[in-house]
Image 1 (cartoon, one colour):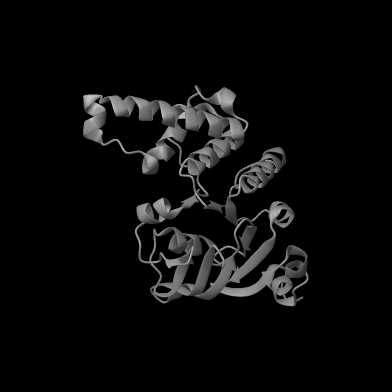
Image 2 (spheres, rainbow, N blue to C red):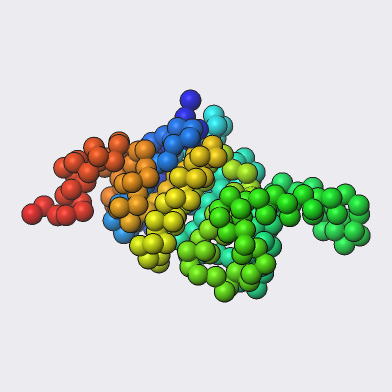
Length: 252
């Protein structure tokens, strides 16, 4: 059974069909890429999966259970984490504190318990801190733990965002254009991080415009155009698909 199933998904904004009758599945442990020209519906698709938008029709099935009517926090608790095209870090917090924020869905302590400094909250705080440091080490940036997030290079901020998403202990990670704004060296580093994340047993669904990155790391690709799926398969097969070539290069 696939870990994630998208069945006949539709989402419109007024008369614009952003996603129209899209279906595909993502197997456990794979890296699956979603590509397409600007306006193809890729981010809308992600928003429907993560719960920030509800589809007009169709279903999203995760681990055999429908999630398309759940709010984002409930979907996150089920095991789906995401990053955004625009990096969303807490600029005036340290790198470690940013990652610790990602552990909130797994913590038991309430605000009142924290204010009262109950003993179990101390233990939980230590546990969260240790787990966050381990995630930073996994991402290769443990030496940046005490730095302010605002003062990091763009590629380092991406690594912090990945670590924070992994703090939710997801089974699948949705990456929305992780190479946006990065140079060639930083993009190569992001590719290494994504492969490392898959090595931890986490499934990855990624939207990306950088063709060299997406072709090199993906097991399979889905291609969208004007909200519809026009191709799906292994990267080398998708590259040769006549409709994909027409969409990207034109009829000439």
